[in-house]
Image (cartoon, rainbow, N blue to C red):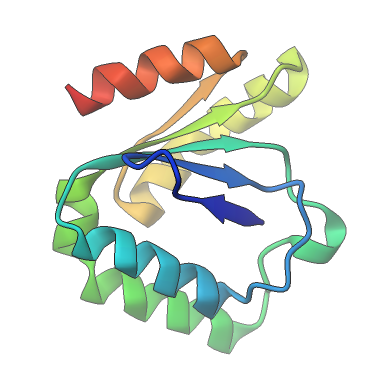
Length: 128
């Protein structure tokens, strides 16, 4: 996964790009965004490849859970949403069914859209 913050408060995440970034690197990047104390949204594209899927290691999950608990208030206040662009109808439907679980786990809503234009419109609405 690759994170691009050049268009903050619209933070781009591309799950299809392989990266050397560890989950710890990603949590540090998100922590830096939270430290700005300004609302933002994630605009995401791509689906994880086999080599960059979330690590199933128990210690890794604990680290992520601990980070989330430590940052729960800021996450709920500042991250306005995760907007995922999925052009394929079948995959979009699958991800929509996962969005409830996503929100319970991460503490902010996931929105599934078909196009970049829909993602921009949703981001603008969430940031108003």
